[in-house]
Length: 158
Image 1 (spheres, helix red, strand yellow):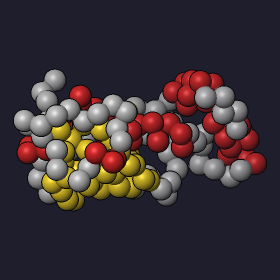
Image 2: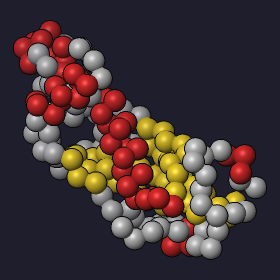
Image 3: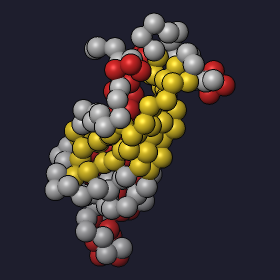
């Protein structure tokens, strides 16, 4: 893995997308079981489509949250820290969809020993439907600077 440093990042830069799927009912059920989310919209198709009038079983919101943090952490590698992540659930995702986490740098700020990067982010399906738009703020190590401390403490920013 190539190290990413603050000096490598520019506004307008697009992050490499993270692909997930195509999603299956097994993906959704395993996630539900792992986090003990037993809401029937994640495993009971007749309930989800009949009782709740949904288009199918629902991809878990907590899974989407996890994907967005994984996406940022993968991009940052060991030289950065995903400091703030914000997103909204604006559309539903169902089995059969392939989902892509995406991001675009909107601003970079020198913060003393470290760099702060602002991003626009989201989760889009294969048809371009944006289901989880958001923003993120990450902290990156400078090329000749100290490592970002773990756990990250925002008091180190000047």
